[in-house]
Image (cartoon, rainbow, N blue to C red; front, top):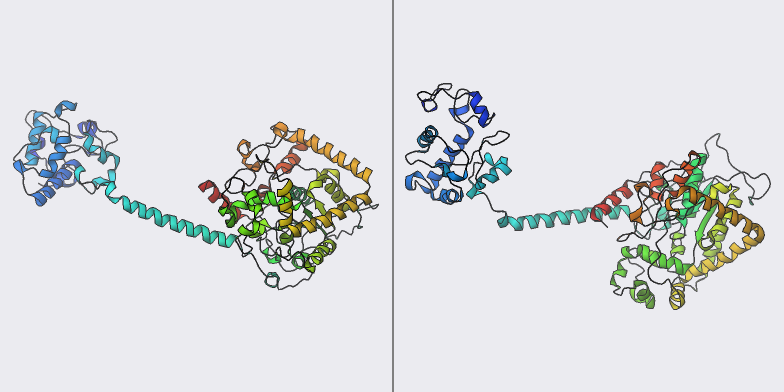
Length: 570
């Protein structure tokens, strides 16, 4: 038949040819009757039926009345005419018989309606559901009985899952090996080509010359500060104080690049500083590092103030064990519910000095300050290192006497009371069990004997500074600081206290949590705060990671690690 010619089967006496109007009732895209303009003079469903009959004839040969055995099951599963709303008229059935051959096919055995309109005009048998769910199978033109069974390929899905899991694990290992540098990086390898030459302040940049004692008449606020940030010593609270002071006065920070620390536990190198250029000079360095005095010294002016903070070694060990224990593999062998007590019963049995992250669980203060945490306690080097710390640092704060330490810091730096206001940040929720006491406390102190000697030395020097400052004056200054903190607590904090991580409403106030637990507390900022205090309140409550991002630090590694942790719900 020539394209465009009318098919005699589509015209019957006393009935006009069906055109676009009637075709639109059955489906605007594919009219049921062949007519001018349609490829091959047939509808889509008719061409599919014709190809299916040819395939069945080639595979099985003509069965009874021209049907195939493969189609019998499909026909038996289809409902009969009584289950459909619109049986075809006689004329339609005659046309179907001419299409199908010598043996007429009943309406119950009619193939699925594959017309492509937005809605089918007739209800479809259940066996046709797969064509409606997966329209891309139309091009393959397979009957329902020939569709592949997913159960037969379950092993393929399992294999794909294993391969993807192995690739993802390899990616995480590569990422972590990049993010965490080798533990024992030598001092020589950490030193940059510039040696220990001091920084060169830009022309016109003022150099603050301040008397050694901030209480001297006419002192000017010190703005060049190196804070050696130790672990689990309230150092995050002190970091927030330095962030606020530097932001208030437009000072230049030496920030890490990609992470929130200077590639800890590797030794600090000035090349790790974001946007570092040889001879660059900075006002404040305060992020986590393993201290390397010569490298740090070359980034700040000669009159910079060096400070750090210490904590009772037994209490620090307890906090570090709970916070970092999950990333120290040798602790995984501990089986009791109280792993800390089990470890302290026989620490030499479990501790591996060369183990991954082992530095977190012995003499952590000594390690952070750049010394060997495995030194023999009887070695003369121990006392030499302690005296070296005393020469290098202008003030060593104590976490147990934090308010008194801030009063001494305010006096040393010639700051205002507002500059040292604080809320306790990155604090751990009180454990359900008892804290270290009695025999366990003595064991923890003995296990961290180098830190214990360091702490005893600076505890004594701290109280000598308090005596020089004046006991009565110290009491007045501490009382004033606590009153100011209490006032800010009522102004800023919703509910007036720290809350669990799950109760924090603003993600910008959500502190970084240890792996496998959400034990670090945070705060909710009050909704209605006056304009005078709104900015100060938000800055005082902002955790370290979010504050670093506000200051424009590149934290792509930290952000990626957080995304992975959130995705895996670690």
